[in-house]
Each structure stands twice: as C-alpha cells, then as structure tokens.
Image (tube, rainbow, N blue to C red; front, side, top):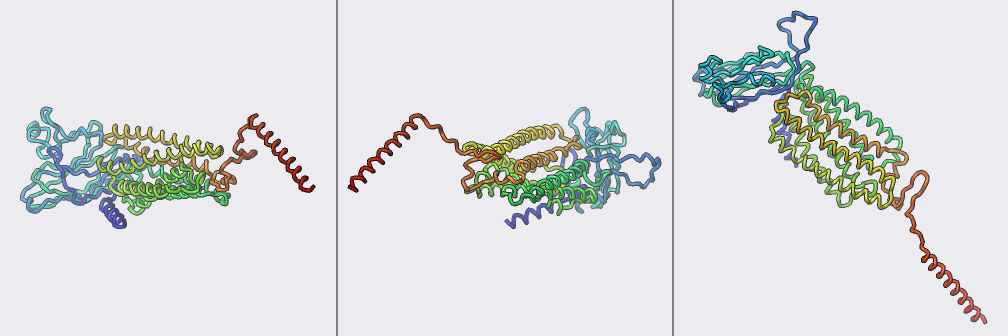
Length: 509
C-alpha cells in the first residue's frame, strides 16, 4: 500500500504543470490532416478593462489581459538540419472564429495547411496555415511564426504578448506544414492572464464561491458547536460523527479558497495546498456517506453497534475514498485543460458505481429501520426518520435531475463556449451536500432531550416517552368469555379454600 501511494505521488508530480503558466517540455507534434499540431492551451479570458481617463497609454504599458510567449523554442535533430524549413506558426484564435482557420480548394476536403492548388488560386502561401480575418475584428486570429535556417537545429519564436480585447474562450496551437520536420519538439512557456489575476476565467468564480461556502460552514459550525458545548452531557455517538463532518467541511472550503487565491496571485498552482484541499474533501465525502449509511441502519438510535456489518461498511468506505482521491487528485493537481474523455470516464466510473451502491444500501436500510420503529411504536424517532427519509429522497431526485442537466450542458457545449457558466456545475454539488448536512444538523442537534433519540438498553426503547404521557404496549381488550373464566377460577379457588378449612378442623378433633 505504501508503494502504491508513493507511485501515485510521483505520477502527480510528473503531471503537475504551472497551471495558467503553460509549460512545454519537449512536446511532439502530431499529424492532423495535412498539418502537424501541438495544442498549446485553451482558457477563458476576460477582456482588458478599458482605461477611460488615459487616452494615450504608453507604448510599454502591460495590458490587463494577455497571452505572453516566453522563450518558445523549436528543436529538430542535427541529422535533419540540412535544409531551410517552412515556418512553424503559433495560431491564437477565439472559439467563435474557429471557422477562419483552414480552407479547401473547389469545395473539396478542408485543410489547415495551404496546398499547391490553393496557392495557385492566390488565396494563401504554400506551406503556411490558412487563415482569414475575423468579421468582428480584422486583426484576429493572431498568426506568427519562425523558420529553421540551413544547418540550424533550433529556432526561437520572438517574445510577444497578445492583448485580449474581447472576452471569450481562446485557443493556442503550434502548427507546421513541413513533412520533413520529423521528431520536432517545442519547449518554453506561455503565460495567460485575466484582469483579476492569473486564475483561468472559468475558475475565477470558484474563488468567490469557496469564500462564500467558508462563511456558510462557519455559521453552521457556530450553531452546532454552541449546542454541543451547552448539552455535551447529552451527546451520543451519532452527533460526534456529525461534528467530524462539519469540521472537515470547514477545512475543505478554507483550503480550496487558499488554493485559488494563491493560484490567482502567482499564476502557479500550489501543489501542496491543492493536495490538502482534495484530501480533506475526499475524507469529508467518505465520512458523510458513512454517516448517512449508519443513520439509515439505525446506529445509535435503535441499535448500539453495527454488529457484523462493521467490516463491510469500513471496506465500502475505504474503497470509495481511494477511488475518489485518485479522481480528484488527477483532475485538480495537473493541467488546466480538461482530461480526455476516455481517461476521465475510466476514473469517474468506479466512484459512480460506488455512489450507486451507497444509495441502494442506504434506502434498503432506511426501509428496515422505519419498519422496526413502527413495530416498536417509537413514534418520536419514527417522525424524525420520516423527515430524514423525505430530505434524502428529495436530494436524490434533485441529483438525478442535475446529472441530466449536466449531460445536456456538456453535450451542447462542445467548444466550451459556455465557459462563464461552467463553474455552476461543481458548485451545485457543494451546495446540495451542505443543504443535506444542515437538515441532519437540525434533526439531530444536541439538546436537553437528545438522549430520547439515542439507543437505550434498559428496556425503555419498547415505548415512547413524550412530554405528558407514557405510551406502553397497549393491552388487548378482555372478552366476556375470559371474564367468565376468571370468575369460575375464583369460585373454584374459594371452594378449595373452604374444603381445606374443613380438613384442618377434622384433624384438630
């Protein structure tokens, strides 16, 4: 197990990039149609804020939003350095202008690189990327490059900052059209900046969201810990588990906020803070699911322990923790760009299957617990469990509906044009989890009557005690036949008593 965690940590270090500072470490070009391409990054960027008071900004002024190219270097092997190459070009375009890249001759197959037929028509230069000016902004897309001279094995792209004047999802590709440039690699970095900092545009709202959620967990913690301190003598084990979930939630929200704040300030995602945030979140989700399962089984309410189910519950929780931890670490401690579909499906599937198993086990256990409470006529506990069941059912229904919306959202946003609203997807799950935790805190809040909700092994669980009455097991009515039987028994007993007195008198005589 230790070796597994060491290998996982080394894998994460190898995947780690400097987030909004995109590093290229010997990336190889891949053939796409008649072009050779390296994807340099995709990010949502807000436009630079206009300066209304300064009508003539200085030439060296740094814009609020930009993509900066730092020491972008292309390398080829020395064996293939005996010719001058066609240019290797950097292409920056907004997603709405994607149709301005590439073209075709006489309505044939679309090509990215200019072919000889297109060059004869005079619409482009052979060996370069085909592009047309945008309708809205003639200066876009931005295309510039560098070529290899004879005997050169290295070509450096001139340093350049591309100012962003329109809010949108921007894409960067390095493209060349020379099939002789085999094993060409790119090195260097690009820096992507928003007006508010280096945080990518689609992540920027999450910083404010986690700040709000941190405040919400503090409020919930103040309520719960004040009740816990007032009635600590009445606390039972289930309430200790709820306390742990609230504490983990407070740490998770704080860690995520610090992670995004430092990311926005420096442009480099803090690996340590991200790992802590992910780990706190995974532990919280695991403990929360185990608490829901134990509550559904009646732990601490109608049964003192889980009995033989303890090992199965622990095994399910441990498996869920490992699957979720790996998924969250790979998603967050790594590149800004989304994972490929197959890799993400491979990691999401185990967590999804375990979640389904949790839901089935929870509702099966709830049904058994409700039947047991009704059979024992524990009406106060039954009322609480019914409210808990309704809240849980509502959460599941809302979750299924949101999953359907999420699938619809992603299937209709192939090019990430709705990046400004994408933060709502992960934020919803945090809000739903927090809402369900609030319901549980209200139902099982520490109070002076907390012990009447807990399991008691003194036989008092066979009835319910409320404020005014004591409801025992209701006796069945006595029939007239039973009354006659009792009367006959008393008559026989009386006659036996008289006969015994007569015998005593005979003996004395």
